[in-house]
Image (cartoon, rainbow, N blue to C red; front, side, top):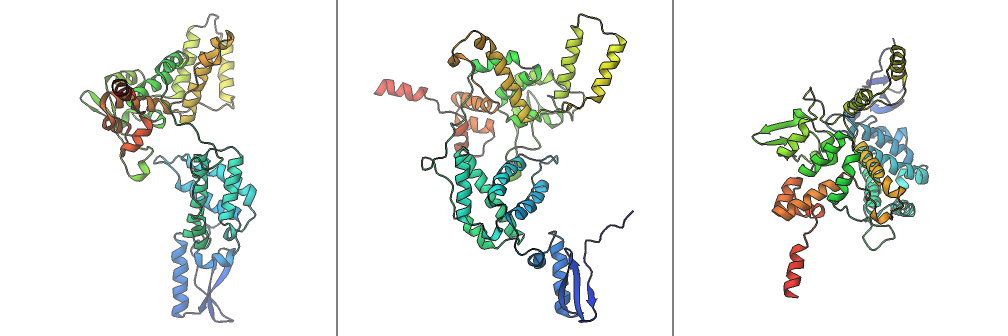
Length: 410
């Protein structure tokens, strides 16, 4: 077995020139006259920087003075893989967002020197995004991620600070002043469309939809719901998710669940409190058990052995312990498609079909209902917003009062 490499350099003497040096990043770095206070101080500085960076800043210019964008992106990606993780150690959604952004940057400017990437290059990159049909908000987010890469690169002394300062002068696209398209705001989903979709969902997904409508959870929160994170206080349960949208800001999140939500969860309570209420693995097991129970032909021992061998050698991905937001959305999308099949076969006009909807709209629906019944402050508390103006986005303004005033006054 080979001896592991020593990552800490050694202070050495070059006898012919009586200079001190150390081996860093594949080359010798001269420190000054051997055993002089200056050379010792320089060596201590390099060792200190090695503790926080793979290559100390004092030798970066010697290793690669002209780094390209590809090299900067690769260095940031290695940092991002470690940094953008949730408390459970799983990668967050930031990684695929950076990956999609980097693919465009590499195609257009991968060969460009990072120190020469300026505001005009960033605007050209933004124009390419507009031409690709990306929305204005998405473009602003991804241009912001490119700036974030340079901010990190400056902190690691990989590029001059002037490069990042110049990129900061590029402002975001403004609504109505660009050719980039604006998406329609997320609206609540109509109750009749949810009710028409529910019969085509698996029982677990059907319960997830109902729990969201009753509590206003985010899709990711209902996917991570487990008994170990619930405090049972009197008639109301309190769910404290380990991770949530604003958790990285140090904010706490508590979701109150009443008797109706509790009754739904009781049907899916796992034997282990650390497991999730809604598990694709248990859904698949229940599906196979139900199909076997209604089987009309007898299953012979040889057939059972063959099926067991096929399952053992199958290369298909096994169902997970919990739903992902994407799989939750896909389950709803497929149910809407199945619900629309009778309309398609009967050649009913599209305007009468069930429109596509996604789990985030359920949160908007509850916000609107709570605001109508209990006011803006109640909607703010239920949705877990720290500012009321954020709740305005989720809870549509109730026009009934305005209509009443208009009918009476003018």
